[in-house]
Amino acid sequence: MSIKKTRLDLLLLEKGFAESRERAQALIAAGLVWVNGERCDKGGHAYLPTVDIKVDAPLRYVSRGGLKLEKAVSDFGILFAGKHVLDVGASTGGFTDCALQNSASHVTAVDVGKGQIAWRLREDARVTVLEKTNIRYLDSAMLLNIPNMATVDVSFISLRLVLPVLHRLLQGQGEVIALIKPQFEAGRVVATRSRGVIKDPSVHREVLENILQFARELSWGLWGLTFSPLLGPEGNMEFLAWWKLGTADGQTIDVDFVIREAHRALR
Image (tube, rainbow, N blue to C red):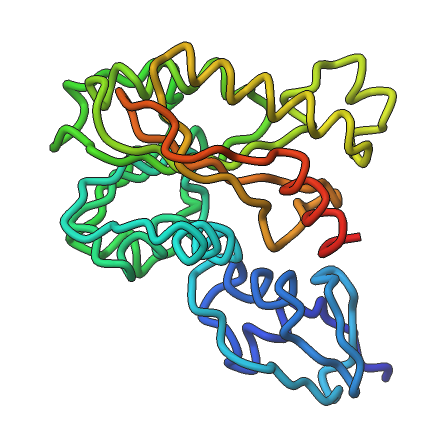
């Protein structure tokens, strides 16, 4: 009788390398998993249960999203201590986890989906989970605390629809750290022409300049701009912006330099 092969993410779960399938997928996506001496970054690849699996190091967060936010925290010196954070597009909870590990007092994790957030975060008294909730229709009456910081990782929606809502929920004060995803900001024509993967630096520049100007018109000051250390699921570059509401820009940002550094590091 032949032995049935099993998906790599499920093997990690079965062998005790991860406590959930989401955690296993995050380890794989982060490039931390080796199979028979070769790095594997595809959770769907199937292997015999007898394969040799090694994991370089445990991922610090419940998903690789935490590594993205961690870069902004490290690059800009962002302080979460004592903050009430609104995590928009929480999904498994990578941003939520990163905020808590950086001493946030409380995180309200908002997502349109259901049952995605990691169990240990769901059980954490410092976390309030708002599932099946579209940020566009979130009312402040639904929040236990008025947030003074927001983190954003949303897909299939432009930040132009999200930032004004955050301006209202944060009552025009506080800070926002958001992932800027060009494939959802460039417009349908450009995204279709690029088959959903934006690689053109000129499009990256146009997207960033447009979003930064949009935030400026909300009286949000830009205090930091960098690129995500990880590509998105389809291979898209993503960028991280740090804004302070009701302020002028904290520094002059060279958008072209950020784009060049992203292409140098990730291509």
